[in-house]
Image 1 (cartoon, rainbow, N blue to C red):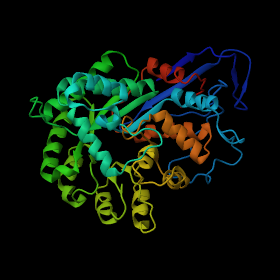
Image 2: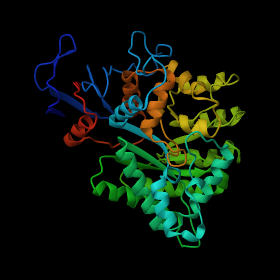
Image 3: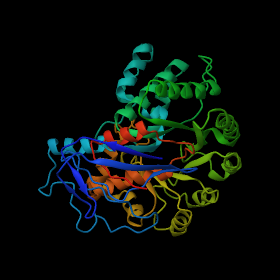
Image 4: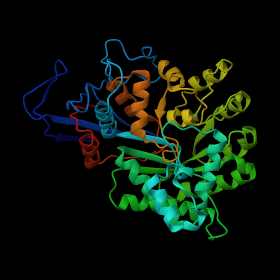
Length: 440
């Protein structure tokens, strides 16, 4: 399906023979959008950001699996950060503006961990007797917690999200906030919960999350939202089997909204081998698998077992490429399993000592599929635009390279029925304030 779109920006046209912009007249865009069974991909021969407040050329992505030039940056590429030293506030705001306008894909977002301070205030106002303060559920800039302390924070969050009304509120607020941040495709994940005090069952919990997704769609939000139902490993394999059964039912009844299964929770609880049976059952039923693997050190045995499934995506993978994990790296690369990377989360939970030591650099250098994510944007006081900015700054990546990261992430979504309308494509382009020539 082809459309001809006409956008009026500063008078610009493309010299197609040289692929260099020539200031003349409004550019007409020819575009092709194709939908395959498990991916949506926009193919282009030329892509250039023309607004000086947005950024320089965005170049076609390298083929999956191809090794990239060693960090920092590609040879001859323009550095996105001033070479004079400290980035001033105005410059940082300009950078953030670019990343907020960049259309993004978020694939690792835990619903209850994504609750913003603004939404927390709404919830706390409804339950003043709990005496919960905002600082109990968020790790501010410059602060850190242990992984164990972070899981304790979730117990506090659960205390103020006990009713279906609470779940509907947080679902809609989280989706709206992601949409405001330029996220155009979102996969939320959440563990079904039951609350005896309010009568909320696990089924009601999932149905309420789905209702929130539906209402956001009906309200016309420019974001496509899917759901992964999560297994909390702390609850054990018996509960995991029940969760898989519930996920299978919703997979068949939600017209593609429920797309997969998340395996997460305290990585020190239980052993991955005990969950093989329910995970295999989920895979046979057609549920995509996103597994938290190697979040903490010395889990090579468990990781190897779970990689044998294999999963469709890996969450974190913080210690996958440690000194004693060559075999794990080989398995991940052979199966081309995308890795969901959450830099702020890893820094604030102290599983990674500093940004420059983050494993993004390793996987990016070897050209392995990676996608930037937030994990818990509320708890870690971040958003996806800030994650993009942080990665670009840390590894000295150009806007062209960051565009490629965003573009490539389309390949790793779990939705199999995503279709883009002409209006959707127009919004995709317009939200970036760019002129793009796309050809299929």
